[in-house]
Image 1 (cartoon, protein in one colour):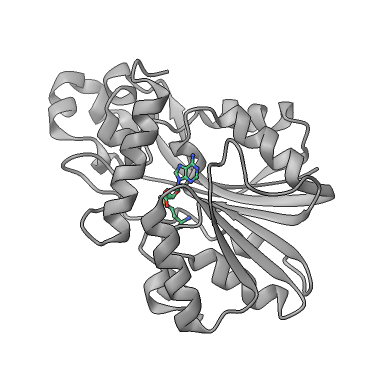
Image 2 (cartoon, protein in one colour):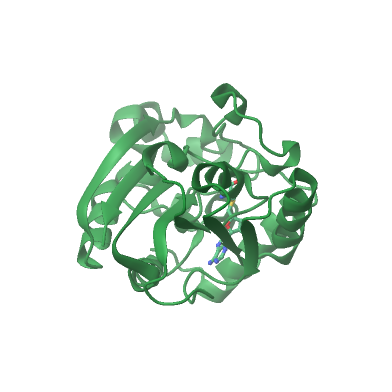
Length: 260
Ligand SMILES: C[S@@+](CC[C@H](N)C(=O)[O-])C[C@H]1O[C@@H](n2cnc3c(N)ncnc32)[C@H](O)[C@@H]1O
């Protein structure tokens, strides 16, 4: 874990994504590096143009099996891309709620909903550790590249368990790590807000989810990134480890599914 404290991390995360919402900052990666995440244009679906800010690390709607009439919740909904994709799947009898703690993101998502004419969506400002959502009220939970940013991930999975209906399911895309990630990387706040330093080890992540009480937990999709996200200042300090890093340590994006 990092020596940086949770309130400071959350403040920096809010600042970064507030700036991203206003298109004044990039995501994701460190100070001098960026990682290329998901390109939704490959999906060939029409959603609101500004809803995809290039912040996702998977396409959780593809593995969520969303059905007409269901109630869906997207955690860390950003500008709304996955909310709008889910809104099409649930149709007019269903509903999709997006939750995000960054006011600028909520504002942007609401503007996008208005522009796209989406009437079955709602965006609520709130934190994933204390969701503004009723108990046992959600059929499907989505989240895309968000939980790695939260200091207390156990609390998030407890909250997911609380708000899902019995038999409800989740499909979550996120970054996880493999191998022994050096402490200098874990403690870099820019790498934390850039979706890397806060990511859990892939095995610990799955165990955390299982220990929150979920069943049939499994990784559906995995994509390993090359080492280009490592800032030069650490490459020199870490020496040969970095050259070997494709085998030694690194980051992977996964989509994990499970049921309550
Ligand atoms: C990398 S962006 C992903 C946005 C969106 N899911 C997408 O794919 O475009 C992370 C989002 O999570 C939100 N976020 C981070 N930590 C949060 C928390 N603890 N509670 C609520 N939202 C959070 C940020 O404000 C930001 O909008």
